[in-house]
Each structure stands twice: as C-alpha cells, then as structure tokens.
Image (cartoon, chains in turn red, cyan):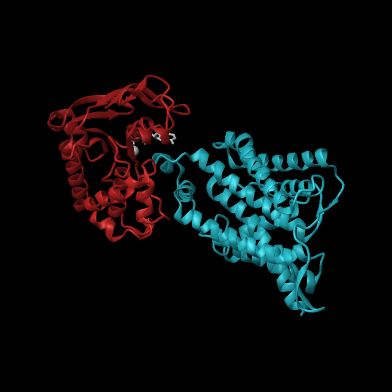
Length: 233
Length: 292
Ligand SMILES: Nc1ncnc2c1ncn2[C@@H]1O[C@H](COP(=O)(O)OP(=O)(O)O)[C@@H](O)[C@H]1O
Ligand SMILES: [Mg+2]
C-alpha cells in the first residue's frame, strides 16, 4: 500500500528526518512511536505531500508520489488527520464533513455522512453546530470523521489521543480497532506508545529523525529498550 | 429635503464602496494580504467600459460585461505573476509589491489612454423624481444600491451553499487543512481574485457613472476609502464590508454637506480611528489573538 524509501526532510537548515524507510501493507495498522520532536508529524506531512523529501521515494498504490501536490494525493485515496485536528472552526460539523468528501461525487456525500454518523453518533446530534464550539473529544471525532469522508484506502492519524481524557482515549482507540476490523489500512502516530502498540500489527520506533527499532506490536511492547524509553519501565 | 437627498447620495455612494470593500475583504480573508492594486482595477474597468461605449459605440450592457471580463482576467494575472511567487514571503514584501502593481496599472493606463481626464458617459441616465424640484433619485444611485444588494445576496449564497464557496471558506481558515481535503488552494485563491476584480469592474462603472470623470488615478481615492470601509466593518468580514461601505458613504456625504467638503476625508478617518480604538477588529470583525 505505502512504501517510504530513504526520505530526508529539512526545515531550512534543520535536518528533521534522516534516511527513514518503512512500509504499510494492505489492511495493516502500523504505528510510528517516538518522543516529542522525534519527527513523526514531519514524516506524515511528507507522505501526504505538504512537505517534500530531498531524497528517496514514496510509493502509494504503485504510484510514485514525488511531486504530486497534496490535494491530488487525497484523490488517490489517502486521508491525513493532522496533529491538532485542524478542523474548520467556523464551519458547521456537517460542512466540515462535506469538505472531507471534497474529492467525491455529490452522490457519495449522503451515504458517507450516514456512515460517519453511525460511527460517531455524537456528531449527528451536533451536525448544525459550529465546529469551534465542540469539546476536544468531539473535535477529534470530527477530524477522524472528516478524514473518513473521502473513503480513504489509507488513513493517517497524527496523535489522535493528544490532550484527551483517558475515557476518550479509550473511545478513540476503540474506533481505531473497529476501523481495523473493517479492513481500513491505518498509519498511526502516537506518543501514547502503549495504546498504539496494543492496536498495531507492526510498529517503528523513531528517535531524532531516525528509525531505531521495528517489530510487531507485541514484540515492541516487550522490548526492554522500548519499555524503558517509552512505556515507563 | 436636503437631508433626504444627502441620505440617498450617501447610501448609493456607500453601496459602491461596499462592493469595492468586498474585494479587499475577500482577498484579505483568503490570501491574508492587502491588495492595494484593487483600486486601480476599478479604474481599468471604467476605462474598458468607457472605450467600449464611446469609441466602439457598443451598448452600455456590453460595456459593463467587457469591463467585468477584462478585470476578471486582470485580477487572475496579477495574482499569478505578482503575488503567487510571494506566498511564503514576509507580508511587508507582499505589501510593497501590491503598491508596485498599483503604480504599474496607473502608469500603464497613462501610456495607453493618456493622462487627460475623460468625461464618462453614465451607463444609465436620468432620475426618478419623487418631489418635483426637491427630491429625486438618479437611476445610477438606484442601480448602485440594487447591484450592492444583488452582490451581497449572491455572495452569501455562494459561500454558504456551494461546494466552491465552502472550499473558499475552508481555505481562508486553514490552507494546509484545506489541501488535505483535496481542495486546490491555488485555484481557490485565483477564483477569489477573479471575483474581487469582477466586483471592482462593476464598482468602477457605477462610480464613474455617478461622478463622471475618468483618469488613470480615478481608482486610488475610492480604493483607499473602500479599504477604510473594509477595516471599519472588520476586514475579512463580508457583512462588515457592507456595513462599513454604507456607513462610510453616509458619513462622507454628510460631512461634505454639513461640515466642509475639504474636511470630509478627515472626518471619515477620525471616525475610523475612534472605531478602531474601541473595537480594534472593526465593527463586525472578530478579534483573533495571534496564535503562538
Ligand atoms: N515548521 C518547523 N520549522 C522548523 N523546525 C520544525 C518545524 N516543525 C518541526 N520542526 C522540527 O523538526 C523536528 C521534528 O518535529 P515533528 O515532526 O513535529 O516531531 P513529532 O511529531 O515527532 O513531535 C523537531 O526537532 C522540530 O523542532
Ligand atoms: Mg507531532
């Protein structure tokens, strides 16, 4: 589904991503874990086309993304739910979801809304509400629902649990499990390593722009070094 | 009666300001820049209409449509050539470029059409007499108010109901997030400049029909006043542009009538300063603290 090969990403003179390679196969949930500032968001933003790598290549469904602009990558079937949610605060819940379906035909919007409302009944109750007035958990659900509106083949989630109360974190991870069961391919970025590894098929550990460990979710959960650094011993 | 006459003049002038202010506000909303060349697009629109009606002898409707067409293209070209390369540049660089574009348009007009003032033939003539000898409304004034209402309604339907209009709002809130939805941000910005410039053409023709003198600098003062109106109402806010435009037209007209013709601009700016002291984001603008 997605193959990232030897990408190097810079912010001006800052070398943020140093020769990172990884892949995500059909139907997998793959997680990138790492401390704050490790480069997780930079990687996702490069995959979705907002940032560009100076080297290497990114293959998505047999297409080389290279210079494909971000808005065209969405059409290929990739949805990115960015860090901090980035919902359109001044638009209503339903308008946000409609924007998520921007690349779809008009006829697909209604069924898409139905599906998302089924998954997030809360959003249905608030469909006419201005998104900026939602609570943090609701905003995260809206961001995920908006991502799902394009009916993506690959869903990328950047720290979906950030800033949420534990009970909401559970809910978000439940949804991720359900999406996984339904066959959605997911690339999940998290600081909450324990939760992320427990839902993931495979994981990669990122440290200052480099991948330092990889394995199945279980392997990493029981890896001594990972335990020490990311799972509180 | 003179009070009523002044009110009518003020509202119709204000309607024209509102149409121009919309262009400033829409472009600001999406490109976060002050397009100082906007006033000069007004002037180009007026010249196109003038030439079409005068030299080519075409009917005024055709003149207006040609003006709209030329300005739409002009707006898109200006954005592509002058502003798009500066998307990531500091706002001061963009501002100076906009001033440069403004002079470029004025000087080009001078080369093409000469510096001499031309007498613009109004696109509609005559007036509606309400009280013979005392109260009448020119058809241009009526047309200005009608245009303003139509433009406002059309724009609110466009931004509120259509897919493209919603995409425009999404872009003005968060360009990166809009791209992640699959929205072509460059195309959306182009479209915004196109709409703003088309409105400038309409305003130019109305303005020159009401005050029938035309020269290469015709657009600059109304441009500055409409910019003031946009700030007055709250830059970035569409209803703000309407309110700011009308208020500015009315204040200017009353200041001319009851205070002094020479001081009317001073009065307008004094009111602006007072409003901004009390409401820094303008009458209908939302004050959004800088995110850190
Ligand atoms: N816009 C930016 N400009 C400069 N440096 C940045 C920018 N965004 C991120 N960085 C730097 O790149 C590195 C990786 O950041 P990021 O990808 O946001 O990490 P993570 O998502 O893992 O917390 C950090 O050192 C960060 O300071
Ligand atoms: Mg991050």
